[in-house]
Length: 116
Image (cartoon, rainbow, N blue to C red):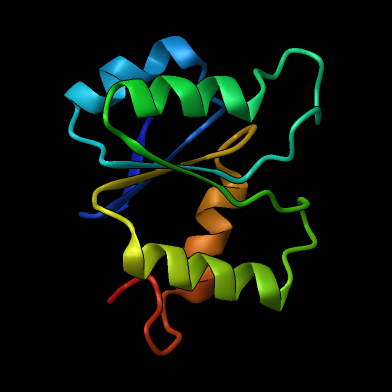
């Protein structure tokens, strides 16, 4: 799995599967954020399966699905709020990691945004 840190508290990755959660916990991630709607692709595990495994390992998990290329102001505001409240470090993931990266970059300069 290719994990890219955008800052010390936030990293992005492509789609994870439930079996990845234990290793992510061992790497120190405290929160997982899924930016992919359920059912987007046939090979995608349901968010509920990842969430159950995350909870089993004591990792926070948040589902903030966004549409590629159409991230809204509401999506950005939701990300700012979850970033402020979530235990760190956070791993954001989606199909390729691009939505998770875009949300972070789009909000890092907002008051109370991701870089704070």
